[in-house]
Image 1 (cartoon, rainbow, N blue to C red):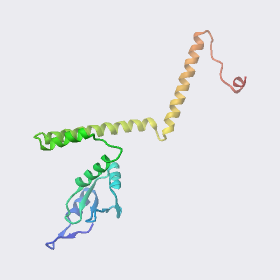
Image 2: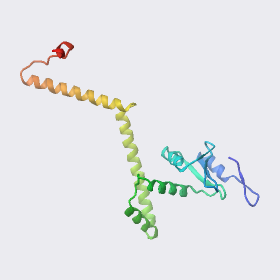
Image 3: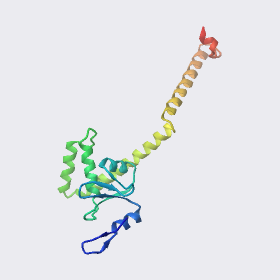
Image 4: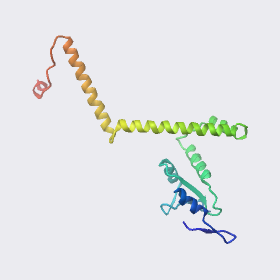
Length: 181
C-alpha cells in the first residue's frame, strides 16, 4: 500500500502499517462515494462489503481524503440498506427504544449489554450451525437418506415384534417372488 503525502508534505503511511500489521483488508472510499477493495484491486458495492462481513474477514474502510477510519459509517449504511428491504431485524418500536438510550445515563450499560448479548447469540448460532453441519454431513440429502433408512429399520423391527406377539416365529423375508403375488 502506497503512502500518502499530507498537506504538510510529510509521508503518511499509518493506514498501510496498521493494516499490514493486523492483516486487515483495506477498503478505500473515494470522494465520488465509490468503494475500492485494495485486496482485489476493484471497485465494490455495499453488498460486496456485506459479503466480506458475512465471511468474517476483518476489514477497515478508510476515507481517501482524510485517511479517517469510516468503517462504522459504512456499517450503518449497510444496516440502513438491510432495514429498508423486506428482511428487517428491528421493529420501529425497537429502534425508538434504542434511540432513547443515546441520551440517557445508561448508554454505556446498554451498549455493553447489547455487545454481550450479540456475542452470546453469535456463539450459540455458531454451535447450532456446527451441530446441523455434523447432522447433515457432506451432502444434505445424505442425512435424509440416513433418517429414511433408520425409519425403515425401525418399522421392520416394529413389524417383527408385532408378528412375534401374534405367535409368528419370524416374518417372511421380502423377496421379488413374494412381492409379485
